[in-house]
Amino acid sequence: MEQKEMSKAYAVDFDGTLCENRWPEIGEPNQELIGYLVGRRQQGDKVILWTCRSGEPLQKAVEWCQGHGLKFDTVNENLPERIEFFGGDCRKVGADVYIDDRAWNPITGGDISNMAAGERGTCEGLETTEELAGWKKQMMRTFMGGGSL
Image (cartoon, rainbow, N blue to C red; front, side, top):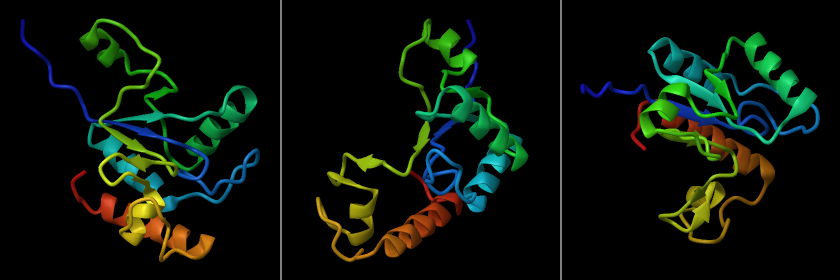
């Protein structure tokens, strides 16, 4: 049996990632990331909305994303082709890339803010929320510029 190559899958968080974190409201859009993901879908990759929102807040988030040109292949669910490939579904959404403002790096032992400071377990060098937000934007630009993960 011939094995079909799967598209690259991106699981992306909503609050604090696709938009500023203003829960339960919806913050300003992260236009750079939205544009990047729209482009990935146009190239044949899959995008999964992976969020803790549910019910009406989830529906509003999906509609908000659609209004910004971003559509999802699934929402808080595994892609059908991955379910078929692996022979079942599981609770964890499977993806090749996870994009989340609360990411933790197992290599450095720190969260995304630790990586900015080049430290393990501290946030030295990022004294304000604005500095952290600026660093996150710079990391997103680097990621979208074609750097490998």
